[in-house]
Length: 284
Ligand code: PRT
Ligand code: ZN
Image (tube, rainbow, N blue to C red; front, side, top):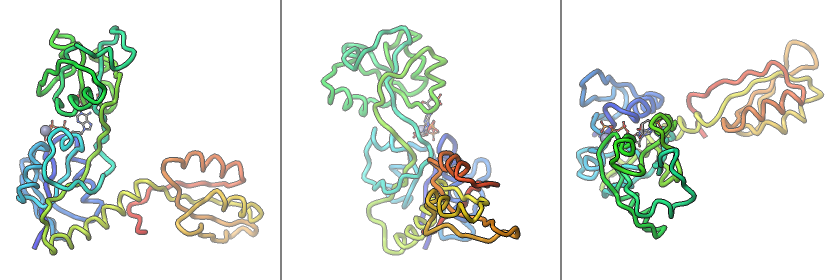
């Protein structure tokens, strides 16, 4: 018995998805043009598909689980369970208008033509704000619609913002935040569920590791109490005596989000020789 997972073949979620499996210790080959692979050391069969097709494949049970952008499901809901955010493929669906066009608030969009590939999400967003606008659904290159006279505004996915910027557009509203999410079919059998639990345990260890750094530092014994208070650690920091009398080395784990602040306070408290390392997996 194998668990079948559907991943995007090419595109913005492809590398994140295969990297995640590899960090989970799952090896497989996904050479050019390959549509199917079997993992060498985990009961997993991998399908490489277009992202838009993945929700249907999972809903129909052709695949048991899949990785897609939350935006895809929000636009076109399917009977699948989205159960685990994966921390990559982050983007937002935003409204943008030409730079020179005045914009105070959403009421300025009323009566305008908005080009988008996300008509359902946009319609709901506008309705909730009692704004009536003309939604033009187009399937690609949404950002050029205003400059060719097709629309007065766009509603499109944004990550760095450089596409909007180079098309003379400015972001004025965030309609939806999105990231890659794992989805599953609703009628998974017990055996598949057991494999999924095993996979999820690894996925969560990889995610936790990405959110943390391993930190090592040297400190005079007299400063240890003060420095310990700055280091949360999983339980408490490890402490190893240095060859030089009166000095110790402290090891701990810090949150990736504020490790620069922690490093600054550690230096002020007398820490020296600070090393910060990435963590591959973190088992809680
Ligand atoms: O062939 P297939 O159908 O599988 O791929 P696709 O072309 O439909 O999808 P793809 O690979 O473009 O996007 C897949 C998923 O990646 C999306 O559904 C989102 O969940 C996620 N994602 C994350 C993004 C972006 N970031 C993103 N930046 N999807 C699209 N973009 C577009 C954006 O609209 C802009 O046009 O990328 C362009 C560059 O963005 P900036 O802001 O960095 O300039
Ligand atoms: Zn697609």
